[in-house]
View 1 (cartoon, rainbow, N blue to C red):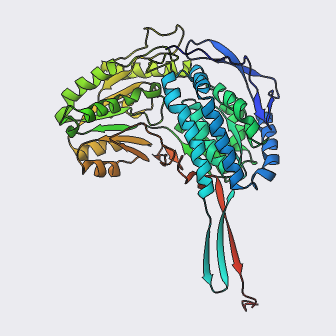
View 2: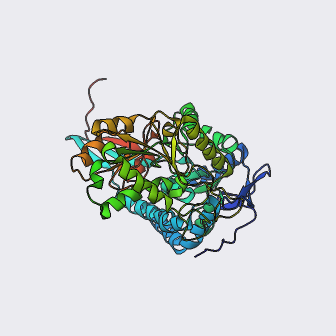
View 3: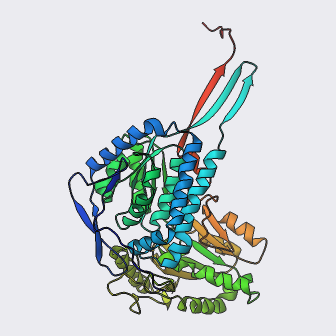
Length: 498
């Protein structure tokens, strides 16, 4: 089935104080669809003046929004979730046109997860409690969570609406006002979404400004008028965000890059059964979302004892991946999100060949049945050693690099030999390995006998250069709150010091 392109505006504006507002300097940039490389709308090229306008709106709204009841905030999130669910197919089509990912993913994963995250935090905020303790007969301590106030959120282009939900849901639930900057590569999905839900959000509580990082993201992250920055993106930009935040001594959460290992122990081939089929799918998960996932399993580690047979079956599985028109429900791998990313991946394909990595399958652009002008790459598997650049550097495309290991200790050593520590996968039938190995791997999320599951109640975040802080889970409320302590004395008598 080929889904129709949604009807979209030829020009979008910023969303500030509940209204659509043109950029102060009147500048716009063209936004092409990765499907065919053709421009389909214009987007505001905002600057510091637009950031200030959004900050004015957010601070005005914070005077009342930060004092609203948790019941009111929860109800708003539930309404947002329902409106999103009621328009799920439309939003999925918008996301596919704007990002290039297959419609089957936006329908089955991205948008359902958006709905679920808003519902999750609507429930989490209702269940949150402070704490009280009696220090002695006349002294009581009360800990109360309070919203930070006005927070900045900068989201990436690989899961535009889902990454927005990951940040917006806990921030709004906790009682904050938000200024959100979408990635300039994928600005339209959030605008189609806010058009549907804006009547449920008080003016100024959510503000969206578009533009490029140095022109809009930098003045937002550097502003003395924000109480926190949340950023998802590449590690080099994360370092800059952290520097900006340090100037004003405000907290940051950073979800950054990854080079996730996916380990397959020999026991997975003890039987050629449903579980082994699941393992093969798990190995092929590097191609999910065109490999544009921070936790992409871009290093496949296979135990020597099964390497030959496993690789044959794995390559055969990859050969069945259907690349093509993202609006086709049969397509498994769509277009890369931008021409810049498309060219970056091609450069890494050349680097892999120059380093002497063996190309087991793929290795180039896809020139089959796909719309002309789009950004399509063949799912690619290299074989080499863990010291190669294609094993160590984040490619962010449908590319994985395979090597082998001798035993458990060797597997863990190779898995941890990376700057990153965001995700990992462990596949085994051995009950001892399925606990020991994940505990030894230095990563914030280790999938065991599964991969690429992102439930709202599971904490997500990185070790090492993959970031600080966590996304998802009720602990996210703590990232958007600060603790007020009331220390109350009921004693009428003076302490006696003065």
